[in-house]
Image (cartoon, rainbow, N blue to C red; front, side):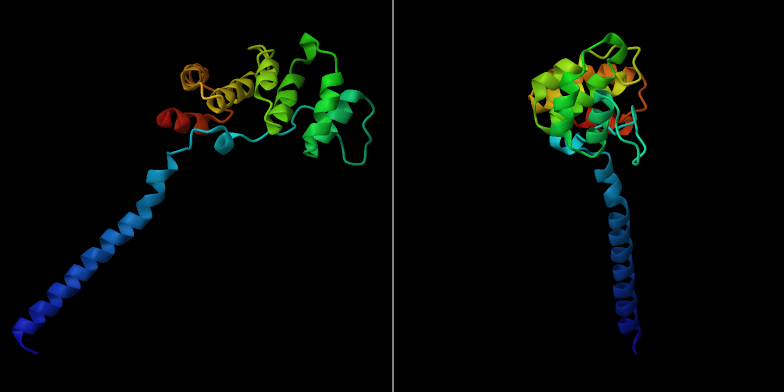
Amino acid sequence: MGKENQRSLFSAIRSILVLAIVLLLCIQFWPFSAAGRIEPSFEALFEPHPNDYLKLPPNRAPTNLTEQAFRLYSEERYDQALILFDQIPYHPKSEDIQLFRACALLVQEQFQPAMESLKKISSNSDYYHPALWYQILIYLQLEQENQAKKLLTNYLSLQPTFKREEALALQKNL
């Protein structure tokens, strides 16, 4: 093989290697460029809050209305749980139930009643941060982006642990 052919071969191999390296780098870093992006919509971000309020052992029958409502909620029978949640008298000591009522409403796309329930949850509640998160999602659904941005800024200033990563990603995309 002549020197000219060897140089052409080495040049072709070098070009292929450079192209392969560039392609590998693009493939490797492509997920990271999309990872920080999040679709700013209710549908993309909503999931009902897990029942961490009142869990019953599976073999124990509910003995009151609240236990029945939470059993149904845990079984993702939100429409039936909502009927029972609505029968539980509101009391400031039981305001946390409002979060689960709101999630049951959101599953049924009843946004205004859900917002009313969420606004009943006080800032000293364990469910205050989730309540704010769901309010942000409702504002997005109702196409009230300015309200969503304002509440999102407030939410992040509270240093929440609930849905923090999603909130940070959402803030970048609003």
